[in-house]
Image (cartoon, rainbow, N blue to C red; front, side):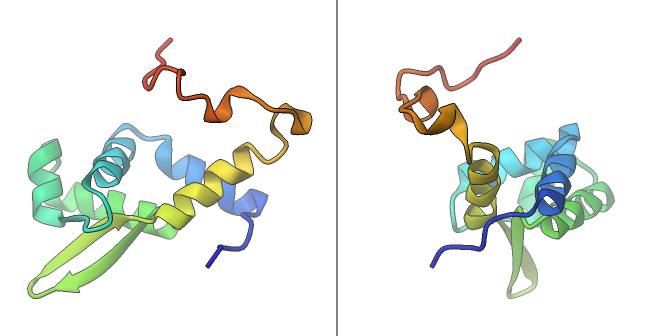
Length: 115
């Protein structure tokens, strides 16, 4: 099932949520964790973020449709919302290279580009 295309407003909300160091770190960690996600306590430990701060950051990421939360016993498991992530990427690359073949799917691109 494919999600509806993102609106500019939804894309701006997602980008704004990721434009903060702790939220970006949380999102990247959850992407790495895969679809099973991680308990909030494990995220806090891995990133050395206070639980109260982490709760705020997770709420912002969930509001931007980038993470999901599910209850597992007494824990809440957070996972990257892959359809939401792919929707944002599709929005950003919608008209990439004017329809010509381009480097977006080029496996030779470096994984981490820093400037």
